[in-house]
Amino acid sequence: MAHTETRPPVTVRTFAQRFSSTRRGARLARLLTAHQLTEWGVPRGAYGFDGATLVVAELASNAVLHGRVPGRDFALRLVYEEPSARLRIEVADTHEGRPAPRTDPEEVHGHGLALVAALSERWGVDEREGPGKTVWAECSLRRRGR
Image (tube, rainbow, N blue to C red; front, side):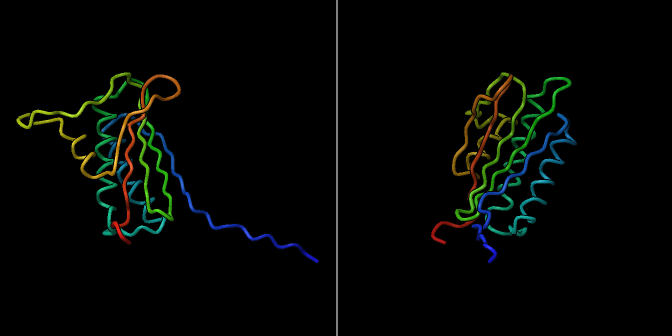
């Protein structure tokens, strides 16, 4: 008699990719995030889809503009927990400098982290193995109460 093993469905999905520290690399990170979300069953236009891709765009842009070290890439990692519809976004670069949100509303540039804070449930900065840091954000892809 054959033994059949039932496995629980996969509930956590991950995507990781390195990109060149260029504007093209940052754009590709955003585009691949949108593609990956649709592959995971989160359709364009769904709650949180645009916000999550915008968070990736901001963090990748910051990695290219402020975290760039010549000859070094930046890394994107997405972790999607299906049951809670939570997406963790991590962007790592090799620059030692820590991001700081701008507090002066008169500043023309530098409000990307305020946007990240507004679109995510929480965000922060962690040490990484080797030089640099990982800037992360957690976004909900489901409205509260659903």
